[in-house]
Length: 171
Image 1 (cartoon, rainbow, N blue to C red):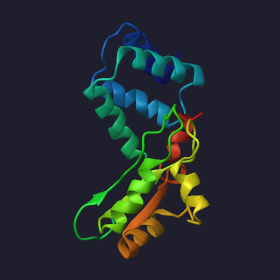
Image 2: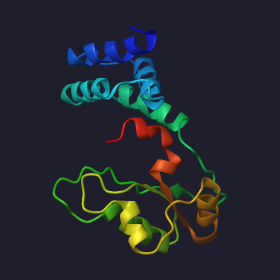
Image 3: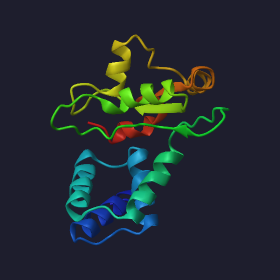
């Protein structure tokens, strides 16, 4: 067993026993996930145990910090706040995509929107599917999305391009 394997395995054991992870432990495990060092079976076991135990603020904070480190960021020059209406996915009752419609309404009202999204996984229509159906080019590079937000008040950040390390955690 390598040192890298030990972190995910220790994490599986700990959360399986309903023990919470410290923020640093969550960060170390997420680094392994984001770099493709975790087997699918280990990831499945870890996530299942985590959901059964329930996530803590410290765990989510650690996971989020590392996910941000592995993402492509943009910093558009705008007046006011920049918001994101990213949906959570996981719609088991197959409703319509409200996060994308909300992004269009909010941008139309004058607020700047950096809309994150992806194709549908569990629902009928993900943000990328909806926008692509409307004729929107979804595979823009970070600089192009930044320019779009600056010029028209909204830009779409296609998850596979802005969060490439998530490919190790996606179905």
